[in-house]
Amino acid sequence: MKAIIQKKYRLEKFPGKSGWTYAAIPEIHQNANNPFGWVKVKGSIDDFVISNYKLMPMGNGKLFLPIKASIRKMIGKEAGDTVLITLYPDNDPISIPQDFLECLKDEPSAHTYFFQLREGEQKQYIDWINEAKKESTRTERMAKAITKIAAGLTLKTNT
Image (cartoon, rainbow, N blue to C red):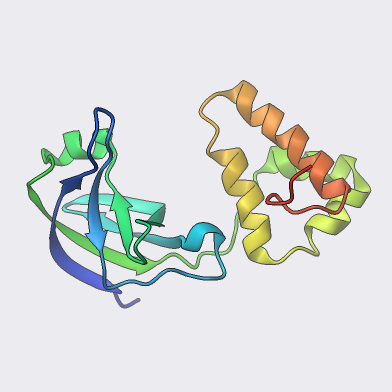
């Protein structure tokens, strides 16, 4: 697979006490088919391998790659330092967590509707569930997802 970028970038930091550290990636454009224009990528930051990562919009039409504190610690870099970023499109098929699949099977209308959704809409639900930090939050999100899906709604639909 060919890299969509392999280049050195200077790490920057958004202003404020809890501002994110990031690398601006102007060469890659927002994806209109994904929520918020995210672009899903995999690759590396220096020698640290990343997967299932999202380039996020900066609000000016450009995208940025957020660099978590744990990654910065592993590679020994902070805002102002230069990193080598190699990115590939992450087009791996979606992986439905087994526990969520079991919940879908328990609610036939949700199961049917979920598999009628576009892959991007399925990913929104799965990513939202998987991004929960606590198991209790994950469980709550699965229950909310099943309710919305059974009602024929996408994650973005307000209820």
